[in-house]
Amino acid sequence: MTVPPPALPAKLVRIDASDLSQARSGQPSRPLRGHTTYKTLDVFSGNSGKAHAGVWEATAGAFQSNIQGYIEFCHIVEGSCRLVDPDGTVHHFRAGDSFVLPDGFCGHWEVDERVKKVFITTEVDTAPTETANA
Image (cartoon, rainbow, N blue to C red; front, side, top):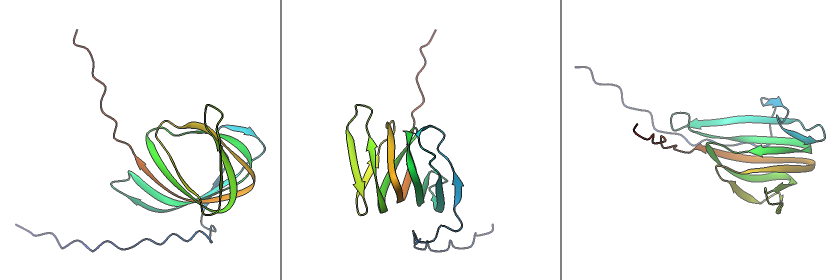
């Protein structure tokens, strides 16, 4: 019987929000107004790919957000934005503010100039739906 080598100890992961030179670029899939572009820098993946952390930056515009199957913690590090709940409640955020977007959040982002956030996401466990016995 062979014994596997000991696992290496886990190391701290630093999130550097100042350098997005290696970030991937894109545009929101559900724009509402403006010509928003964004950059996403993924810096961590864990829990068998169910948890992620990184930096995200967006330019001016408004776009729909539809959080399905995960929870996201956000910490604004630069700029400001508003998130609007489906009922129209407006939440203002600026550098230093933190918030959580729960699974099922379906509102929208409004960015006047630019916003940058550090994020952590984790997938939610979805229980299988029960089917009725015929």
